[in-house]
Image (tube, rainbow, N blue to C red; front, side, top):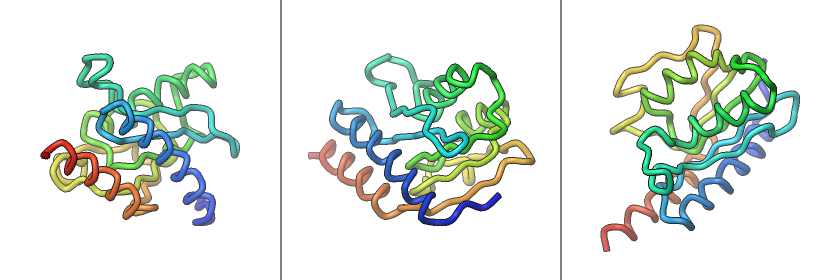
Length: 148
């Protein structure tokens, strides 16, 4: 089921708020929200530095929180909004969650699933480029500041 673009923008902006939280605590600014039945059931951002855990990506945190929220491991009727194209690890986790839909903002030509490999569940709908400029600008500002 295709959602109107304005709803996708609305929820992506919520994911961007999570990415800003990550930025503010010196984490790579990636944020995610999971939506089910028109409401946000999970919010997350990168926690790899804080948790000293390379697997603590925003998507992984969001999957866990969403599964706890609905009391089930499969997220068939859910949509993940994430500010950056998922990596192959997150893609694999999303495959196993059988998430219904993934909407992402900025593409990740170096580490994203589309260049590094990775498959979503065959029934998962993928949509890219929602608020891509805003998502990309936040990441660029973060890494520009790191290089100074």
